[in-house]
Length: 151
Image 1 (tube, rainbow, N blue to C red):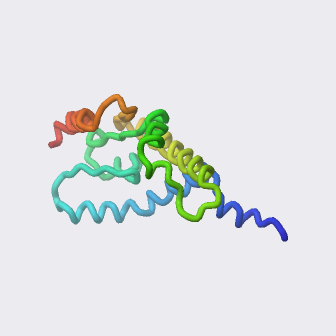
Image 2: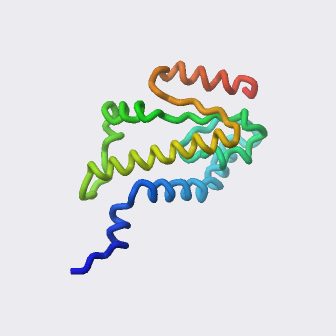
Image 3: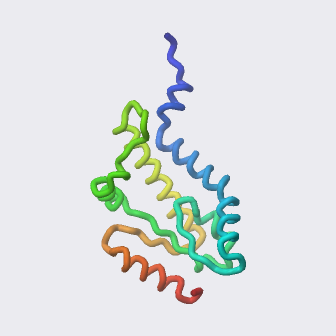
């Protein structure tokens, strides 16, 4: 039996490739996101949140980058999530090595987060690191304060 490197790579991609594919997917789907959001409240401002709302995609469609904030979890907070949230450590069904799949997924997520911070900083977008020191209400207050001039 011959070793098929291409098939193996498809079954067990490395986190760097996974991150690149994830980032490319965000760009491909962003037009759909804009359509969905504009259908919700046409002509009105809104607050949208989501992993795929990347700084480099959102910045061109807002009046000012001050109308944006990027929340990014620290590595320590993400590790904390692994111990607290069962869904955070669940691997996809059918993987042969669930531990490796989780490591790859978490490394991919870290690479995507690092890229989001770099993109935000390059554009002058405020970045807030979520480290668990603020509870949900405090974090909501911080974001509301950031957007106060626009609400």
